[in-house]
Length: 243
Image (cartoon, rainbow, N blue to C red):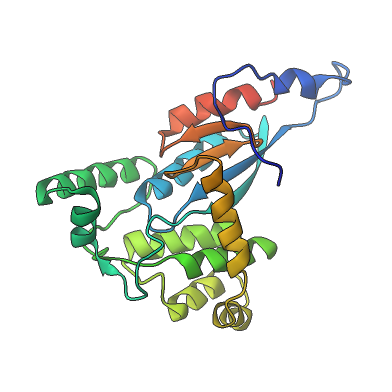
């Protein structure tokens, strides 16, 4: 992938004009097409919010804009042990947050999740887990054309159902649930496949200044940071849409 020029959305861009060139008024112009790289982690609540908001914004532009979404890896806690850590203790140590601040943040996350139709059960999400193997499986799932369904399954498993998304048994079951071959998933996880590819992609985005997620990159040029509301994503995407 060529190195992106990560320019914040809002610069001059006229894809609709370019897309319409060469078409008569009696011929419908093809839908505008964009590439979206969504850099995120499985254990990031704002990534779950952002992905759902992004997809809903694209739904509002259906018929005007086609998007090819590629999910890129980012680990919020790459040094976590396999068994993970208590979520409250981890957040308090990492951010210096009090119990009251943590609970207020969780309530804000619940509310924002509800706005996009995603259920956060923070009581069940008692631990934070290492997500490297989940990213390896997502890398393979993209090759199989099932990356986005697996991402949704992983987010639900962790944030709604409170499952251990570092567990190979859990990952294999979720892979099968979205139509991937469970035996092949077991091979991928057992053989440490795609580890180098995931680390390379993680380094790629870190080297280009991505220090927090979600980060939504459009056409390797325009950066939208954070788990924005649907309306913000729609506003940012609309200039790319076919008029």
